[in-house]
Image (cartoon, rainbow, N blue to C red; front, side, top):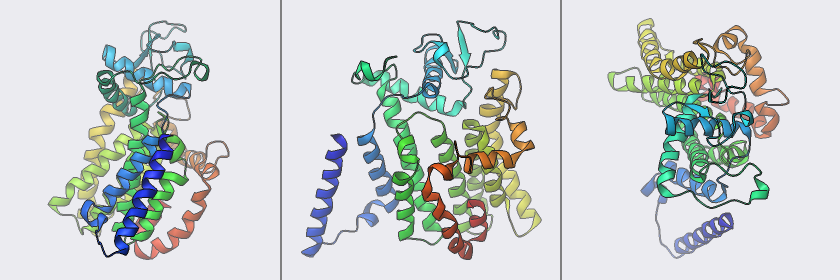
Length: 362
């Protein structure tokens, strides 16, 4: 019902604007508010209107339970029956000193800590605004133990920010109208649409990767490395560190994007770029990825997710991870998002304008 109301309101607004323009009234909404901001607001409102505010899978329960543990106990870990029993969670990692199977106290989540931190922040706000509406019990046999605002806000907000970043990136590469089509196609014609209704970590990691590309493109569009542009390099590195801390396999894509950011005409320029990228990367990756891995497993490279998803295994067989993420029948992006089949066609035109960006995007 809320989505129907939003669609009807948007259609009514479009008809009203068309009529006013027909009689000679001219207002440039994109110029007044900014095309990117309008895209962000419309995407966010549409996804909020279509959201459900509940969790679907044990993966989401695990992330949410770790956020609750951080709020209640100051530890980013899931505690028994707060709000889910530990045996219902996915792959809990036993804390050091409590590795015995069946330990009833608490366990770390195998997922990245960044989404846990974000969910904990929203959860704190949600507790002040009220628990939200009750959902039908027959649809949720284990109860809707999550505060609806946490699920309702994070996914749409992340997706809307990604759409805006993609739009601005395409515009800076010299593509105006196609930028809006690409951003809308991403938001509503890809896996971003269903994932915006969940508390999964993949959208947030993808948002940070898009942020890295946006920062690099913005830097390159503003010319050579200047003192005022170093913050874009540091920002790109910091966003890459956040992506890796969210999903460790994001390191496979961060390497390509950071290499694009480090490219320069002279070796001094390349060293300076690499320094600022590395500084930003260290600021976020060391505490949130390496430090969290040490807490969970005692190893700086192992998050507890499994032997195939560690920083060491990714470095050993990067092609294996790239194939799994992109082409595997079970989890590959191409398999589940046919829209990506148009990507190579667009890269042909992008290569003519920005070969480096085209190579990194491809």
